[in-house]
Length: 97
Length: 488
Image (cartoon, rainbow over all chains, first blue to last red):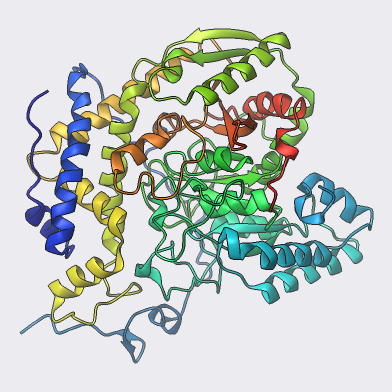
């Protein structure tokens, strides 16, 4: 079919906030071209008037019934998982100059 | 197969009720078996023997007091490393979650505990459930017990291999595109993916939320039915979960429903790409149903060749969004090179994720990005509806659909590692079922000449689990493939 679009990996990796080495990007580039080429099969289908499907069942506006406060976790439980924590708070690098 | 660790839930629950064994004895047998063979199989990422034995002891005490809970009481069930079990590690086989310990139980685990099950071990998988061979685990490669040089399938490869070799009486996996059924087929055990929404996803680490489902691995269809009965139900903590419809006493129902059925066979599933031995095996299974009086209906699922591209657009798009939460801030790996907010994200994610996860995040980000959204993501969502329509049309003519589970038996380790597209095609017969939200089960249907297991897939209507189980059970009980075990 038509020529395969070459992904601008630097641009997409930045959108995804994902650091990759030059070698990783080079290897991925060829693989993604193959995969995207395969995706082009979809262009042969007539989808005129077809409603997009995001989900297997049509379920909308789900409300919790009788939502009662249940068990909850103290800050010491939740901050314990953080890579760096102090005084029940998560420590991060300085983000404001 | 006289060893305790190779028995079924049904057999063991009868023995427990008759006082012929105890949960501690069964659990110890499973622990000892794991100690003996897991060095070769490498199904488990971690085990907690003391915790399992404490649960088993509690079960025995409950039973002694006359308060036994049902068929699952005292049965050790292994858990895929993507489901939250309180105070146990949850790593999704990723460096990203190396130090994570769950503060809570997933809803399916809560329900199994309420049924008295012994929650046992953390089973290996492809990192974040992305893969079809369990080679993408950041920790270890699991071997297929039928041939240690081959892969067990994936992503729930640890759950399948553990079953095949008697390291658990049942296990849980998750299935986004075939991740329960394909490894079940390749390891010669029963594996089942329910109708989307039947089991809560609360406590399952999200990969592709519109496709992910929890489901059981078991030695028999009846055992899988018992596990489903225990786990199903609407859950306020998962707004996509749905109250069951129709018959849900599956284990009782499969003894009464004996057919004959109208069984659809989609001609598109027997064409290019299928291994000749697999093809012959499944045709033989179809002939068996015919010989029992079932009507075989030639059906067409014309859009099925588009299921793989649709899946890898929809699933990667959802994954790129779901995995944004692993940012190095609250609970995931944090890079030592983090200097500011941006490098905290980029470096931590770059170090924490493996190759396949990165590949899918990039692919998913791309198909959602400005200028490509309509061409890829929106178009894929439309074709997804056409795929569902194919099944709806087919089910007007039949009660269930028969197909191979996997186009090939287990392949050699490393064989497809550098060719992601070939790996993606491992799921060509299972993926459309997830896209349409239907239930399906893989049952052992025989072996190749070299002794590798083959699986038959039975696809049911939405919420048609009772019929699907019955169709699978009838084949299973008339054959002894499910009773065979590897030489290990």
